[in-house]
Image (cartoon, rainbow, N blue to C red):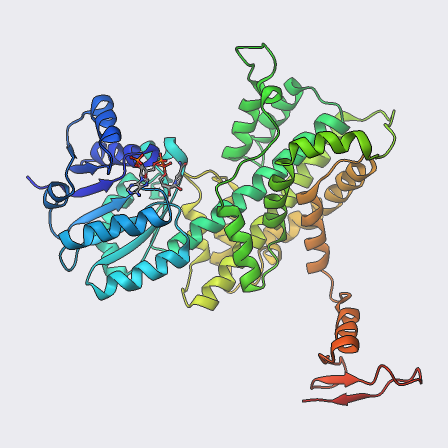
Length: 479
Ligand code: NDP
């Protein structure tokens, strides 16, 4: 009997996805380009319906036509070289899926190149890490709709489910699935940094112990903040290091790592000209954290505010921080979903923003109850310009903006960096202001570079004669 799917790449994700597929009734051929991982996989997970291969040709030939192959290899050049090695063995109509965290531009390129060869290429954003891959990830597949229909039964079967619905739906053409995954990761960066700022504020300003903090996060997980990241934060803060007996959080070096998808989200925001400031601050915060040695040195030389003896009303500030965190989260998701909207228009993808929120409800790292509200907001108004304007989020923002302000003020007063909280508030205040300071910027640009400006009282592009001695300035219409 032929295998129904092939998984190429038996690293952390590939092996668990293969096991997930087999458990769900697929006959899975597996292959890794070096023997070792296949050997390790076979010895640990030998199971019915899993058919290991050490030879690429026999792997491909073991598959039922049209063949379906999921690549789970490191993103970048590895994907190209694997695709090249597969091509001579494939037939027109076969489907290659890339489940790695590939750059969406690479995915667009691969999609077009493979199309010319008669091979379908599906980009599959996969979220949920090792555990999600095994028990149900969130999946974001894109490419040709017809090709997607061929693999949909398998993908939908292995995906996480929420309220009976699989966390997997067709995203759109080309590499849009990888785009959606990239911004998902950017939002994840922002979410994590906001949580880290809430933790630091409550610990260092309000003076909560780690035990109290774990309890606070646990209680927040019973509220509108309920989410996987809040849940694991409570768990992390309760753990003790076996070797030293110290709290686990305190033995971990404060240098954040990254694999690049947050940075890509920000670079893409700059390319599109969208203000995804909170995601970008979260990326920068990780860069700054990585300068540990310099920070240690700088602490000895650079001063901040004098330590305060103020006493804190713990209950009051726990509530303020909770609201500030929720407010920051609303702004971060508003930015991420706005980036989806602009990308969808710019690239002609027709992304369904409500469906994307539904995919994120299960399996993935940013899964949260909150996503139902996002789905609802886009279902009620498909043309919603910004989540902040949806009735639920507008009401919450109006209620909580004051808490965000109070927390930032107290943080700044105590010399605490709150990059994402501050960025969220600046974005909120900027977005809700009908009049910005950009009139002055336009005047400066016209003064030094004759770039022209629009006027508020008539149409056209104007240039002012700034250097005339008189203080009364003439503007002339350029266009
Ligand atoms: P691993 O490092 O565990 O596995 C990488 C796999 O790629 C291995 O099977 C490796 O084989 C293979 N590989 C590397 N270079 C080549 C090459 N030139 N040719 C063929 N195969 C190659 O990574 P993960 O399983 O964690 O990740 C796989 C992909 O999934 C990545 O793109 C990652 O970003 C993405 N991803 C990861 C998530 C996670 O939480 N880990 C979540 C979602 C997506 P070998 O070891 O033999 O070199």
